[in-house]
Image 1 (cartoon, helix red, strand yellow):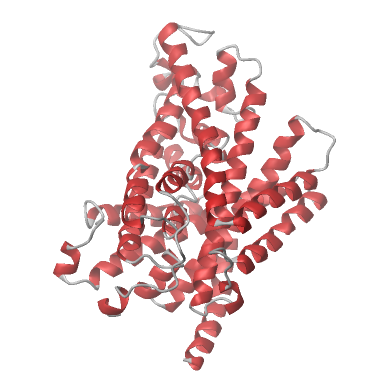
Image 2: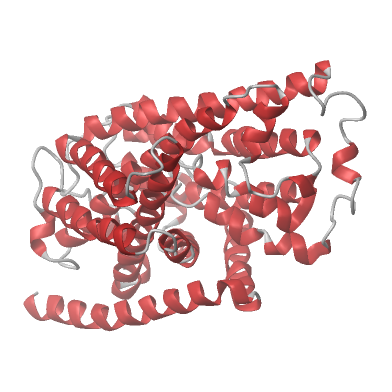
Length: 460
């Protein structure tokens, strides 16, 4: 593909509706969700204290993936984001599969978070049916996404402030326990819990490796920065600033937070029966810790659904512009792809039905399906950026406004890590179902891709 065609300005980009603070907070909040507040317990049990290294490695992968996406987004701000980049640089099949795999990922995560909200609401309303809360949540986030891009940004801004405040509060509270010897966990050697009970690697290298998938899943959705960036008022500065906050976010909100938890509590005591964050507040004597955390995780789940619906809607609408989705899905009103958003909301009504029919099993069913789609999309983003570099002249590479760092070694590391993670899914039986569903979806969409691209070529 010619570099001339690739550098042509895209006429389908909508009028910007997000300010720099919106993009920054979308970036800030995209990796802070139920994967941190609850899912971190499973990763800790798998790896013990060595989970800190897993979060650092996973954070590095996410950073290089986002830098790859940022390089392409600043160079070519186009509707459809990475689905269109993969189509241009890797071919029609890759673009088609990536776009629909991302939509699949977002819908699955939405279903999981919708169910999580229903479960969280039992804390206050144990006798109310789960499906009621699922329906109410869809009304709230649906209205925000249909109103305007700015309304989406403002809602995400508020959600992120709540989540960030909770994490910072936990870190400060944990530091107070360690420094001033508060509660039962205070006093003594603060590093003892990192080396006791099996040492830093209690389950060996295998235990650390088994935590990779849980950690990468927790970072799922961060790629929405590239989608939201196309709506920014000053894209050339908003995306770089947002992406460059990733290392700080990983260190602060994951490594530091999990580190504080492990310093205060023996890793075997973090069982997941309650959130590790609740254990911190309990140690401080905050007897309403469970209620406080319930508010935070509700906010995290609402934030995830809000952002995922936004991201999936923009990517599918971008594909519709290229006739890789029904053309009607490209219809916009005040910059909002209303038909696509309504269609996605319609699919999510399945969540209402599932929570009515299978209230006890639905969360486990849908939560196990997202990891394959998440890392597949990341892999395609990385491969598209590598392919885009090969199509550039030396001068074009030198003129890149936001080039990836450590080229090409950082990209090769991230690609190898993701391929290794697919190998872990083959190795561990717990992930075979997710792997089979992912491969099945990939096969189905490959068939549809051949039919769709064939019809598109015939009309051209």
